[in-house]
Image (cartoon, rainbow, N blue to C red):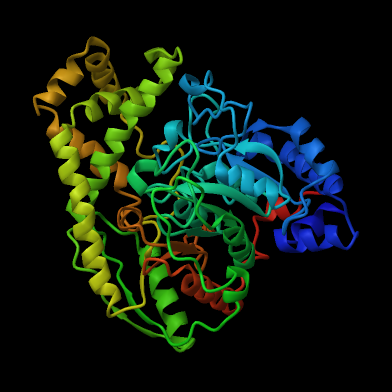
Length: 500
């Protein structure tokens, strides 16, 4: 098989070719590895290769639905027994898991040949992928821009032709944001649809979900069939789908009632290209026979952002404590992570409990919206993929905050509430370009980013659909319909298409 033929196939088709003997798992693996070597210097998508493990798998892959297909997992949350899960941080490299995560085990049982781990920001905490440990990842559509985050390495690997599908997870938009940045399809399943075990019951109190990024809707549907279903000891069991998602996807969604908005929930600016993306999607939906009108749930966006950020801040000290228990020091952490430790440590237990209680308020309001509308349509991002370095702390601010953190004064000031305005500013800046995705995480609802728009500069800019709890089937049906109406699979960066 030539690379051009490999690039023309999604994971489902590659598995079919393996099954009928037209190619072999080893041949596909070598194509994927060769493409990684060709593009690595430009995109830096893979932070850890697992060639030996992959070649062993390729000789006898499990007889699953993706038998023999090359695949990548994320170096955050996807534990592979015997190999450190770094979370993009020097501090975590001493911790070696003794067993696979449930999702990794299921990927292997599906026959996927895992040959590496993808890059992510330290502790998966940003919407860009720029860890000091592994270096930043670039967007294959324009190497001066970010592929998004935190599953940015996965998105860059797919968009640069290394694999047709890769694993991600989504605690605040980390599947949907990079999918939107890189012209891919990304579905975040409902809370509880996919197990986070065995090491964790619910990641980020249930805000995070496991899934894949892909170039075809059918790949994502088949992957969800592989992943969905509870494991022993999971905190609760969601109602199973009425059938296989790969089959449910093919059904017509019927006439859907869809409310849309382009207003930022935190009052930040929404770029005209993001507005254009939603406007185009709304027009396309209307042409397909859906009822589309401007509407949004009655949710205080600023309150939702504050609740999300309290959880976000609160998680960091716990992760760092785990790393330090294994021998890490503060010097192993990036400055922003150290700042978040100080800020998060200042959040009291009553305050955290209060903010967690707000999730119910948001879920009830979204539920009321979904009593009138099947789906909510928004931009995935408020801005096209940003250039590298956009949003970084200015040098002077870094120096001051670094001094305060090193001397311990930052924690004292934070506990006294004297940094509230500064913290609010950092929080607002961190969500400035990604204010739309956290709603699904806190409410536990499924959401997807669909690649329906490219900017005048040639950058992808996806749109987001948020569904009712447990309605992955409806989302996949609509995505499949949109994919047929406006195909995106064959749309790749020109320099990738020309690689041979």
